Length: 207
Image (cartoon, rainbow, N blue to C red; front, side):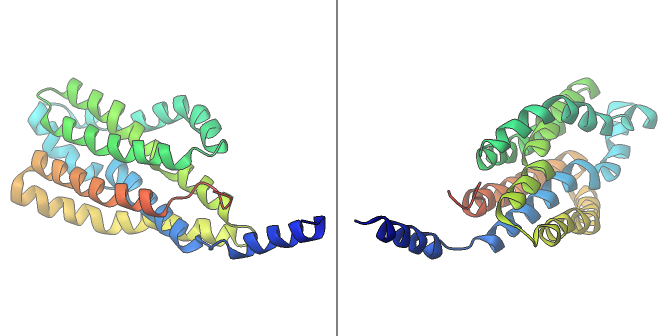
């Protein structure tokens, strides 16, 4: 095969590759919705009943969000390197499993210390692994001039989560109590994120 023929074949292969932009946007939306929704949006709904269960002050419970920032600062550089190497999807899948595992464990805890440890080591790490850093990197790999618009689209996932999830969480707490409500939301997140990331997330166009 001549050089020109090889170039023509390569160009034809590139042109035949399907564009997965909508799938990437869907995966990013789910990433934002679940990671920010289950770590931040519903936290205020669960703080009061959890504080009563653990006989803890609201000031103590209010320190929980700081776990996210401390842990994200610790693992962020490591994950950034992994995502740059094209390992986004695998870490998103791991995070999709860790997040609900940490929430379920926290919902079953007998003491605040155990609940906080489960929340910080499982839910927070899982949320960061599958959250905005991963989805933003995914979108950056796939979109060129329209990257800013794409990032704005997936970021609406956190807004939608802030609108829907607190109401859903409050209704569940009224029906089954805060422990079972948290566990149900965790399991629901697993049923959404695992198939979404496994089906839609592709690290790079060349993959």
